[in-house]
Length: 208
Picture 1: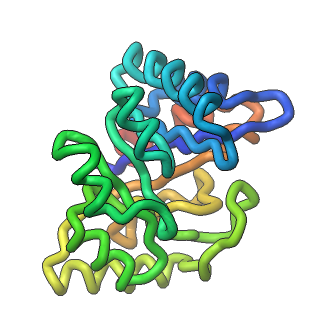
Picture 2: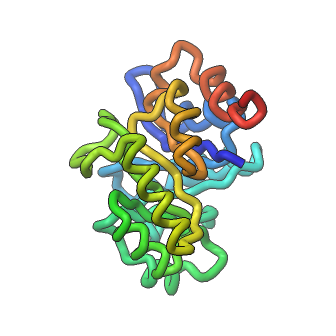
């Protein structure tokens, strides 16, 4: 099953919780709360409200970066960037039941996350995205094709989610590379109807 994940973002008209609720209404069942630069109190308030929304829709709820808040709020897991707490340390702190994802740009990154016991990988960026600063080198379709082929050849089995500037028009070609899903953000919230846009994305499996 090709998975669609939503990473929270804001626009001048849409707040974090509004965007998450739109994604959920559109059928997305994997939400990541990403609030770069927010203090712990602000993140905690938004995390608890986001978790409540996700529980109402039966969705998995992940917090970006902050292992402490992830544990405090009892969410489903945490997504860790390259400069965040190491996965092994996060696993000791959170326990086996928490989902731990990691960010990768190269095959070496993937191997590291796999060996440290990560549960999934957000791999990218696919192309330039304005929702993230300090981007790693762009992968494009060729990059994902090469990475997935090498993973299969070496018996590395871990869900690989493509991320970074992905639009509806990219899904077919990205799925063909062998990735397990995509993560979206700005392309949903910038749509005229974000709920309808998300619905089209999550319906990829039934429409292909």
